[in-house]
Amino acid sequence: MPEFSHLDSTGSARMVDVGAKPPMHRRATAECRVVCAAETIRALRDRALPKGDVLTVAKVAAIQAAKRCDELIPLCHSLPLDAVDVTFDVQDTAIHIRATASTTAKTGVEMEALTAASIAALTIYDMCKAVDKAMVVTDLRVVEKVKE
Image 1 (tube, rainbow, N blue to C red):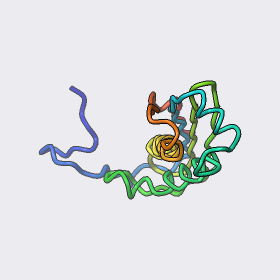
Image 2 (image 1 turned 120 degrees about the vertical axis):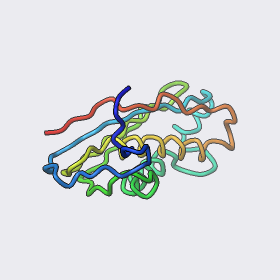
Image 3 (image 1 turned 135 degrees about the vertical axis):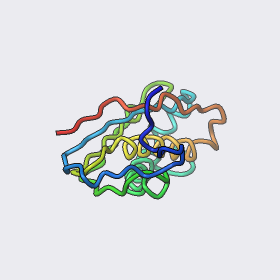
């Protein structure tokens, strides 16, 4: 069984000590999808949803979430983010979300990318739930992790 870095020798949770690691440029990309009705997509494209411009609000929410990842996930390190980019591919019955976070730090930035993607999805869900009760958030995953 692999060793878990977030557990000490007694099995208790701990924050990993990254103090001795050198800062490096790191980038991670995560993605997910919000599956919804075609009518919901039409309303989104027409900006006819009751809560307003869904994708703009979702992008801002995603960026805010990435910046606050360490407040949401207890053992995450606080990272100085260099950038967070969020894009949406609006399809016939889904919205594909892609979030990329980058930093120059001693630890990776994949949790920030995952948090950004998931909060974008949850924001879309919140803003569309009045017109679509059957939406599904799915396929959250890291698709790229780079350190240079």
